[in-house]
Image (cartoon, rainbow, N blue to C red; front, top):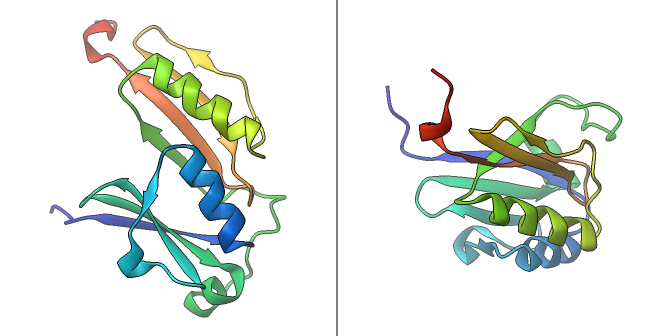
Length: 135
């Protein structure tokens, strides 16, 4: 089984603040699937997207309550091309309202750091060098 692409759906409070936050991190949006109720954050064109849905709109897709940020239901992990890119993204996130929820971790072959975005969604940004993986 192979899926064509993945769309992670996350509730947000403010479209404009969310768009500004992710734009400052260097990401773009697919305007075809973005409007006043939703943003389609492009994580990897053609493969991976995050649908950032205003809470009111998000609630139309589920019969469960939306988390109040006191619990964690999902950790979003994204891989980038270098350790420097990990540090850059997390630094910009923290400078623009993101919150650190744990310190960076270096396993030699894998390095990652973390932040919670404006709506409390937790993101791990990682770099891996499979050639450094212990045998």
